[in-house]
Image (cartoon, rainbow, N blue to C red; front, side, top):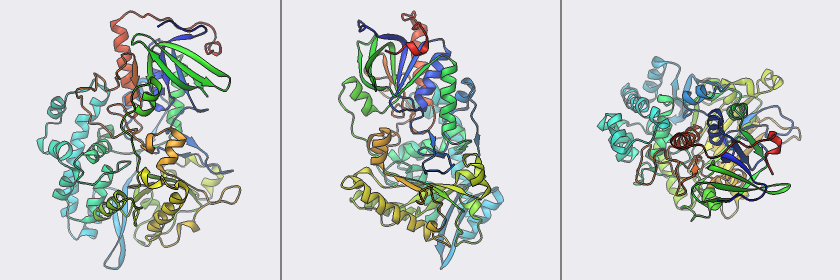
Length: 539
């Protein structure tokens, strides 16, 4: 299409500066292509950022996304990122009252210690043996599937052959995950701990016929080929800062405060119309990569909107003066909160909470999980806070779909936060509020975000952290070679809504870049890099 007067021309324009857009920018720029990245906000990072949410308090929290599992070492290595993660020695702790006694299940600290914890809770070794067998199976599936995420999409048959275990395939890909949970485990608490990985950001029952819960479970157990969830050193913003540095060092131009308004394309070249505080501008490119949701992609291209997405989580960030004491005095809070601390997540509790939310009510006992970043990585705290024993807490609540907040987001948020913390307090020897730090204005250091808040702040459709229901990691009729293709030949989707998207992985960004570079290798380069100084390239 003919370019408008004053238009700057690039090999690729990337819309959206979240981690996937930054990955794509870095790969394309390192391949010698001219790249412009447009970001609506005043900073890059999207949901993978670190910030200081509490006034006058030197604590840099991973405000939205907070753990890393799906980011391939391949991306870190190939882009030369200055980024590290630390493993958690404790996987999880789940408190429960049984026989009038406060107890719980601590998973981690070595095989023998975990075996004893299972035996003390359940009475024998059966559940621990089943746990080892079940996660041995998922571990083998992870080792086989995870490397495929940065390859062209396999067919369903090819992935099934790669898994090479028909029992595992049936459990994970064909029957509701609730079947496998109930076949393998007897204890309600153990069943609930297993099921939680199927429900993060996914509003579904264990036996949902859509298998949305299976897809969520799969992505939560294949990361890194092990399923381990690690802590980003320096917070999640350390990753996106490293990606932005890598992209800029390779020559990519990053323009914050630039909101894309429209994409015009004839399938060969495209123009992105954007807005700044100074007015509108146009950037032309051979390819446009959209690091936003399918909803935003449709709005930009003028295509029909996809089915509405809906998030189903409560996100709470806290800063504490100290960790609270537990009613279960056999467990050190520094261990209990170092892994995933499960609250009201027994198997039947999860089913009840889902049924209540599906009926339009807030769960009476809201399920949630908590962890303390600063126990594994104290660098996110200022030296004074660290010396005084301050700690962070991140809470992720389940089964709270966006529809529940529609009539009064603020009031429902406060009601849900109160009842969620009450569920936690039931297992504490002191109220959590007694442990909360205060900011410079004397307010408690706690903030809560509903799905509607995430839609407003980050553009997550309906607050869905995956942009839409997660996909299977194989190709289907309309998924294309890499899973990033759209109905427009030169417009690619590189956000979480791409096939194999979701989570902090960089996989859609990598795959979109590979799709573009593969096409460029097959055809002569038709665009030249823009000339002039970098600051002169934008109109």
